[in-house]
Length: 316
Ligand SMILES: [Zn+2]
Image 1 (tube, rainbow, N blue to C red):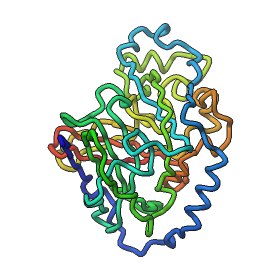
Image 2 (cartoon, rainbow, N blue to C red):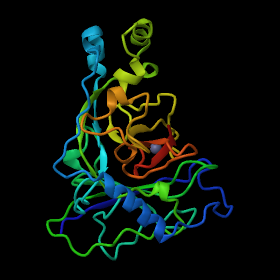
Image 3 (cartoon, rainbow, N blue to C red):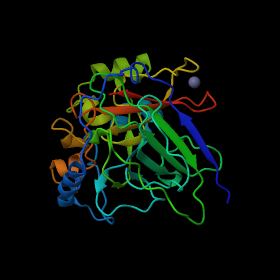
């Protein structure tokens, strides 16, 4: 079996794992998990469904041809609840391709198992998404811990080669000690590629000046720049959020975003997929409740200059 496996653990993050106080939240009970699943069952999306972002109301490249060079294609992952995808498919949460007998990643601080967060196949990933040589499956895990008073969760990433035959797999780890708001319900991705343009703060100075004085009929940042929700690649929505590698102290590259929900009252006119009713069961299908507001997103960054490809999550 030509299976290659690489592991990159995020080093201790600022504040993120220094809080040694007992968890403020009681461990979630089995009933909690069942209640979440029962609620999600009312919002099942069939695997044959698609999700379509409405067309941009203004053609920014027509307005500013120079912006064409800054266009990036983001993969909106559109996680929705339904029949769980197989362990080799791209997915959020649920059963990952994790061979039985392999040691489960553990949080170096809280000593609880990390939870499967996001699994992405090479063909579903955006161009230039980092894959180790001869691998075709990216698996991201994090510490499922409330971080209302501390920093972002620890991350671990694995890159695998999907083997031709799948042997026995390890079930997802128990969620004892976890904050269920950080444990996604198993969701299928309804992948859609969309064009994004940089937040003005990330534009070259001359371009930025032009866009800042432009008076489009809709707000550039909300309607024309970056997609909200869980996505891979493209531009980071929050330009004022950056990450520095804790190993080499150089700026890290934006990788993906994990979001509590897919749209808000502000963004829905532009970014709510046409097929989705405006209901929380679709809007926040994975049951993620991130950060102090329960509605935060994490922008996740990677450093490929360092051998282990360390990752960091930054609240956005
Ligand atoms: Zn580095």
